[in-house]
Image (cartoon, rainbow, N blue to C red; front, side, top):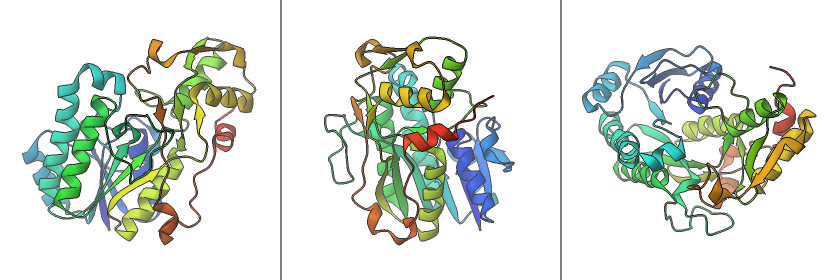
Length: 294
């Protein structure tokens, strides 16, 4: 079986690595060669999803049985400042990919930012109302795939893990690095999340692709907590100085355009047999898994 993983960031690399570990011929496709070690040596092909012809030609050449889409800029602050470019990459890219794959099974990795954050947590049946330009672009991508073929939109909450090679390291990595260096770090005390580890996301993607699930599904971690509380738990697990964490208001920080509650829960997951035994781990477990050095 061959699967294209469109997107070569930390999560895309982890998905490709998990697929290959299971004997699947996973090929990573992106504008830039993967920089993250998470890809596990997966072969790479250059692809700009904004180029419809390039999408069609690559799919025709590689003839995949399935596609995992985790493409486009994920820097939410950048997307808010560049909404048209964000929409071109996410929504325009989705149209080009959907045209190219012609009904093949697609798993799109989407986001909690399709909700406005007014609820403490959002399930699959809750009405969408994007919080920002990133959420609007991802919602447009969701609709494109869901309307055109056999697709699953897997909305994930804040994905984290150890990502020392990434262009924009995730929060857990950023937190550990700052505290190890003795640097103060501004962390919102009023931004709520249900963080999910990258290994749990990749495990779900592989299982759901194997089952050819469609529709919308949510994946959030079991802990709902503020970003500040999460940072303090990371510091505690790593034996680092939590006094370097400076509480700030979300509105006064780099997280101003994020929804207050970036939290997800699932109404479907417990009913899907392929997810049995794949309950996501909590933040205390994942914090202890972060390396003590490096």
